[in-house]
Amino acid sequence: MMDRPSPHSPYDSPNPHRLYRNPQIGILGGVCAGVAEYFGLRPGVVRLVVMLGMFFFAFPLIVAYVVALVVLPVRPAHLYRNPEEEAFWRTVSTKPDRTLAGLTQRFRDFETRITGAEAYVASKEFELNRAIRDLDR
Image: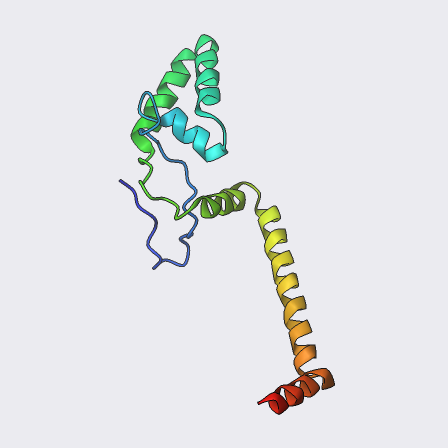
């Protein structure tokens, strides 16, 4: 069983979104279920594609399935802490530019709020409000 990579190497990614077999929801070893989970598809769709592919590419598909069954690690039970974390890491893996744009926007919003707070604290209005509040004591 393969766990998350150790954080000791600078080349390891903290992203847990990898291709795993998922025998808990799979039928025959969980390869189709794992592929479906990785790409965000329904397992039935992937199984249907595999079954249709058997008509045209039976031998290579069987070999690929057996290799995937042997090579792919089993999905760890608690891979993500919550659904939001899973959605974030899936987006990082499949659409990194969208994730970067989202993070950039969040930092811009944060900077705008901080700038507004700094401007308020440095203003005369803040000093006046503080003086009025001190009078009430």
